[in-house]
Image (cartoon, rainbow over all chains, first blue to last red; front, side, top):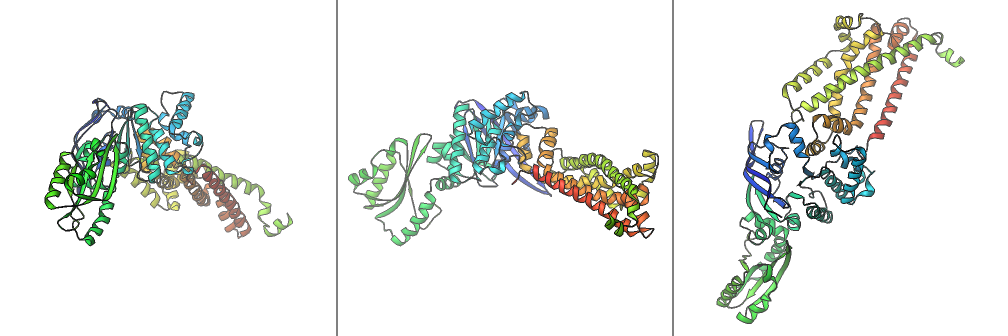
Amino acid sequence: MTNEAIIQLKDIDVTFHNKGQTVTAVKNVSLTVNRGDIYGVVGYSGAGKSTLVRVINRLQRPTAGSVEVNGQDILALKPKELRVARTKIGMIFQHFNLMASRTIADNVGYPLKGGELSHEERQQKVAHLLDLVGLTEKAEDYPAQLSGGQKQRVAIARALANDPEILISDEATSALDPKTTSSILELLKRLNRQLGLTVVLITHEMEAVKEICNKVAVMDDGEIIERGDLVSIFSRPEKPLTQDFINTATQINQALEKIYKQARTLGLDDHQQLVQLQYVGASTDAPLITDLYKRYGVVSNILYGNVEILQDTPLGNLIVVMTGDPDKLQAAWQYCQDAGITITHLKPTDPEVA
Amino acid sequence: MTWFAKYFPNAVTMKSDFLQATGETLYMTFFTAIVAGILGMAIGVGLIVTQPGGILENRIVYNILDKIVNLCRSIPFVILLAVIAPLTRLIVGTAIGTTAAIVPLVIGSAPFYARQIQNALSEVDRGVIEAAESVGSGPIAIIFRVYLREGLPDIIRSSVLTLISLIDLTAMAGAIGGGGLGNLAINVGYSRFESDVTILAMLIILVIVFAIQLLGDLWARKVDHTA
C-alpha cells in the first residue's frame, strides 16, 4: 500500500430522471483509493454504492463532479479513449455476466479479441489466466456447466485479461454461499498481493470487508457517512449504521438479541451491570477479568466473547455481567478505560443500542 | 405408383408443372430470405441498439424504425402486392412473375423479421452487454460478438418462424401471378376443380415447412449452451 492515489472521485453527484421523478442516487461523494488498496464500500441495497463505482469506468456518467483514474480525467475521454481506459479497469458482477454461448476459454479471451495479440499469444494468455484462478481443466466447458463460485472465477479471469491495475467488484460474492464467498475473497486478496491489483469491493456484507479490506467506506442514502482504515472503523465506529454493520459481521447482534431476552428474565439489580468490552491490539492479551476481580472484587460473568483478526490486528468483544458494589463497579470501569478498553453499558430494554 | 395415380389422377400427369412450381416457390423463398434477412436483421439490430437504454440510444432513429416496422406490418399482404406494383415495376421492370414477387415479399417479411430479431436480441442479458462494455468493447464489437452471438439460438428460432410465414406469403404472391405452388394450387387445382392438385401442392409445402422446422430446431439446439 502506497499513498499514491489511483482513483480520485471528487464531489460526485448522480441524478436519475424517470417519468418526471428525480432520484439522486449519489450525493456529493468524494473518494480516494490508493494504489494497492482493497477498499470496501458497504451499504444496504439502494444506498448508491453500485452507482458510485460505475462512475469509475464511466458505465455511469456522473451528473456533477470529477473522476480521475491513474492520472486520467475519465470524463474528458473520447469514446475510443474511454474504451482503452476501460481495459485497465476490470469489473466483476453479482450475476457473473458470462456469455452462455462461449466456452470458458472463449469468455476469458473475449477482452483480447480485436487486440494486438496473435492467436497463439492469446491462447497462452488465456491458459495463464485460467491457471491463475484455478480453472485450467474447465477451459472447454460452457458457463452453464459451472458452479457459481467457478463462474465468478471465470469472470475474474476475464476481468484480468488486459492486465488492469484496478478491479471493481460489484456485489461479486452476494450470490454465493459463505464458503465460496471466502474462497473468492481469498482469490481477490491473493491477486492484490501477487499483481499489486487495486480492488474496490462493493458489498452489503461487512463480513466480506472484514476478511480482506484495508479501508472501508459506509454509504447510506447516496452519501458516504463514515470512512477510514478497517481497524479504526471496526474499533471506533461513529455512526449507528456502521455499528450495525459491524455487529452483524461480528455476530454481536445475534448474541445481544439472545442475551437481552435472557437478561429481562434475570432481573439485574444495581449491583449488576451488563456491559460490552471492546479491545484492540495488545490489550487483548491482558488477563483483564482476573485483574478486575483481584483489584475490585468485581465478578465478571462472560455471556459472549469474540476475537476478530483485522489486518493482523486482533479486535476483541466481550459481553459480560459485572457484579459488585456500585462504587467498585465505577472504579472497575475506569480501570478498563485506562487500559484502552471501550466500555458500552447495555440496557436490556433497548435492543437497538449495542 | 398405381396407388398414386388412383388418388391423384390429375396431378400424376403434371410432373413437370409440379417440379417447376416447387422450384419457383424455393426460388422466391430463398432470394426473399436473403434480402429480407439482411434488411430485417439490420433494422432489428438498429431497434435494439437505439432503444431507450440501448448501447447507442437514439430516440429519433428508434422512433422512425419503430414506426416503419409497424406501418409495413399493418398492411395486409394481398393489398401490399397491389399497392407497391409500381415500385416493383421500377425495380424489376415488370410487376408479374416470380422475380417480381420478391419485391413485395421482402417488404412484407422484412419488418416481421426485424421484430423477431428485436425480440430475440432483447433476451440477451443486459449484464453481459455491460460486462463487454466494461472490458472496453465498442458498439460494433458488442453487436457482432455479443448480441448476435449470444442471441443466436433465438435468432435461429425466429428465422425459422419467419421462413415459414414467408412460404405462406409466397403462396399468396403466387396466386396473383408469382408462380409457384400457391399458383398451382389455386389457379389450376381450385379453379379447375382438380382438388388432387391442390392437395398435392399443399403436401409439398408442408414437407418444405417441416424440413425447415426440423433443421432449424436441430441447429438452434446445437448452438444453445444455456442449459
